[in-house]
Image (cartoon, rainbow, N blue to C red; front, side, top):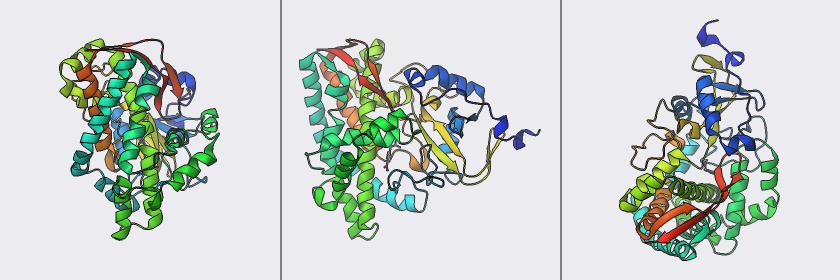
Length: 402
Ligand code: QZP
């Protein structure tokens, strides 16, 4: 058989379940085996294709004309099944809709906006770091990672204080829902109606302050770029995407610093490395593991023919450890030239919030680098299992002050 005409049957089979806890406990040997097996694999359990090499992940995320987001970026194919919530008009959309909505979102994260946020973000970072230094031993999930993004980001958006405890449960629903319907999804949706009620109510114009990023979205209604419902949906995108991602990035970064003492020593010497160090943590231990696309037409990956309307899972975190792309891929190196990592995705759907995420990471880890002397694990971390997030449930850490 000619390589270009091979079909599903010729793609190597992915025997392991990438949404099982055993996989999540240590995905890296599995990622390596997946990259070795071939450019594209077939999962009989989930009836989807899987790409795990940097080259193929990059292509699938970049070629939006072939690999569509409009049928959902999770396992569920919206062409075949009803989505659990009205689809996102930016994430779960293709051009031209995506172009219009993303333009409005991007306007709320220009360098000018980020510059205006910096002072507040840096002040809150100092408060956070001083507090954990006073504690000495703390849980870097509860006392550190969860505290900061759930404060500075809703403040910047203009959300009310009351009810913010719904943000993390909502994120847990959103991110689990990108995977299969398994017991993780089921548990995440336990209190779904209350959580969704609060989220939807707080996407409304009246719920938001007049001077935040949320109000900037509504300004696009007044200028005729969006209708009122679309503005609410874009605020929902902020609430879906802007909290769990950074929370888990912070936890993962803290774990990196606590387990690579040479890198912590380097950061402490040069706090100005904080921004690149945070970026490297997005490569080495990124919070977003994988997202799906749906083929719009027959295509081919590495000689395997793929029909239209097939789901493809792109393992971004595997791309981030691909030895064909990275020297010492399995080493956390805060001075690495990290551009090209897939931790924030790539292409037209690459993370639109990255200027704010980077500001948060830089502010917090630069403050930590200036103020702390030592960082070490104070116990065994435990994992928070989520279908697409790499996350800790608990991360006991001990710090000392300079
Ligand atoms: C989640 C939305 C890492 C992500 C895919 C984050 C994300 C982005 C957008 C939305 C949700 O628009 O609801």
